[in-house]
Image (cartoon, rainbow, N blue to C red; front, side, top):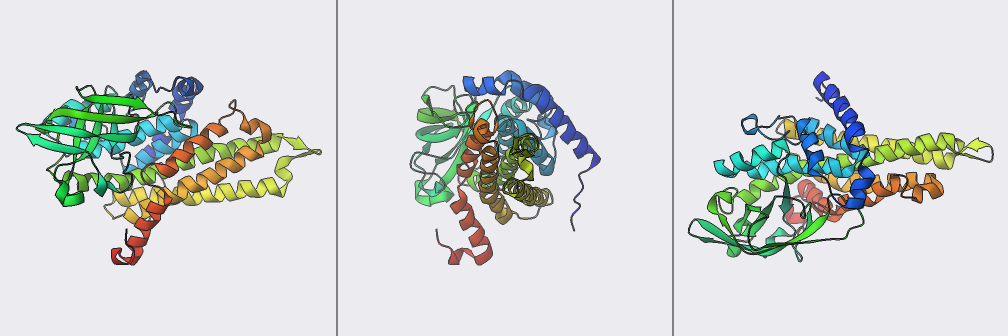
Length: 383
């Protein structure tokens, strides 16, 4: 039923991304964390590798790839820099809403995304609304050939640096989620105000609050018909959750490799600490859990590539992989002892970054509810 081998092209791509990551991404990581910025020059280099155009059709300048291949890129990049991985993660997922937009939107925004000249953020979360999108307060009112948008989007990853936001707004509040429509809102328009969060992780990406006060956009910037685009865009999250799982596992894999090497070199009482079962068994558990999570994520992406429904599986990826990665990374930090607690070593950064993956795109309890609805039926699992 499944072919567990990567194709020759995928193996070559994986190696190329790994080499690129070590040459271009790794050297400036600490500086980017301190600066709290992910430079556009680096995004351009990633674009030149084809990493920002993998979900964009060729007619708009993309280099289309399978979702399994996109997963390979996200995992390899996350082994060195979660933030670089998130650039590919977002570029691949934000394409889907734009494909429902007008030809003007696709021509003027998809091409710059593929070339690394423009970048986007997703605006679903609000101060009082996270996973319950039915309670969105942002409004979009049609006036002639324009929409007037009012509302606040909160916890927006890359919000301070992005060129535009894909904002969910209610065009007909009486219809609940059926009245929600996504819009592409350039962030340089009058009425847009941004303020940064001061977070424990994800520093180069950052998060922001974005307030839209009577922001006027052309009707062509509506993504899909009123009330229809929302359900089409929600399909995005099934891929995003599997990719997030691979990001978490990439960070866990690097931490595990660091801990394996350190445990062979570090001696106590005349022996490498790797000889102690308290250390070796933690490493064995971590290796096993990473392998289990990896197969779950790639199988989910394979299902997407083959047109098989994968809502349940993607939710499994999203709750289990970040939670498991947090446990593994923490164990690896402790194995390193006092030096693991230092910012001179990368494990503490991964520990902080992986916590964010437990929250973004839905926490574990929401994912478990999605899984329960899939296996029991919605009538047995009320909201």
